[in-house]
Length: 410
Image (cartoon, rainbow, N blue to C red; front, side, top):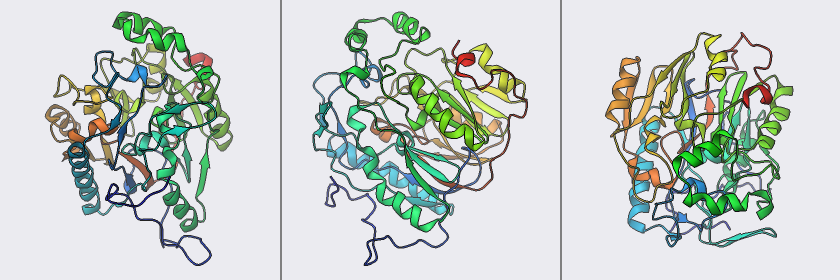
């Protein structure tokens, strides 16, 4: 599926290799990150090249609003005009980061136009690689490729394999890993649930969400990396439409033997997809919460017992997302923290910028709204490779059940 042609002008070039086939080593390259707020030194920024709107699938149905023009006949390659404009935004974002001394890599070229076919399903095309945060989870000195639930994203990891191989060769402590590959057959989903979705009211979908009735079943191990919030020794995972309990149990078994503590979070949200426009760490001791998706009282306990301040985000500047966008207006919260005092915010979100200014941040406005439809905001469009700092204990006051799925799953 790898390609290199005019459809992919912003993709990273194929890695130059030695005669042995092993990539050249990039001297000084380091893989390590434990949170989203320590000083950022190296990052991947996504691209919009040749992105497609795929056919609906059981996992994507609930992410697309019932009245959206994306439901139905919009499958196919996005227009070149929108692709070019999105890349203009993403390239500008990458340049801002580079000008601040941050190393920026870009995903490789993959032909998203090809039909995706496995023994268990087929779908019209791939998706794209604007949001590497969904696919890649940097946990300490390892980068994990996540088992995502959208059929169109089944081979999305291919956009990163060359970069990850290079990281592996360049940093002798780096480990590249992949979670178990899901099958994503019809048995992986509640198909009757999916079929009923567009006929349900917001009240009905909220009631189902509060009952933990999601389109994904427990057949596969499923999670998107963007459902995982890293805070030093503690990992918080959102249970919802893109991450099931089997996925959370896998994360617990994977990382708790390494000294991490894994917690499950849930919010009053009828479409719980990705935690980074709902509950966002800004610096040690400070969280930003979406006021329309409140955190349940019992789940605030660990933050309160450890003197964390939870601040509600101001309202977004926009009443509606951009055309053909999967995400909500709350991408206003989807920011990129560069260090404890510096944050990148989408340039039209003046209210959010003012709030960060009052919280003591230097605010860097970034023009990205026209790339939202390709996979999300500033946090979505990036994936950490290296942040300075070590694995800190930000929650020394633990309590019985604080990292038990049963405790958190009210």
